[in-house]
Image (cartoon, rainbow, N blue to C red; front, side, top):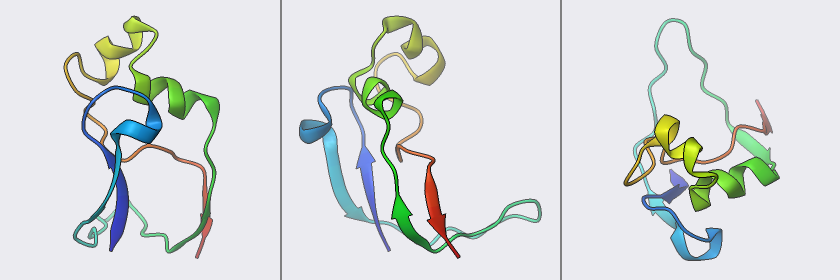
Length: 76
């Protein structure tokens, strides 16, 4: 399975990398979605850039804790 990952803060075109990752195994209270379409919003861009700086307190000071950006998806 391939995923767009970011491991540092910066402009989206510079920090996003497409890499192969293992297929996640859902826990008892989770679901696994086969994504057919994904949306990108302005908030995702701000989180990748690491600004405003108060956001870094929640998402990691040196590098982001959440490596897979975006939450707007459609699928089965």
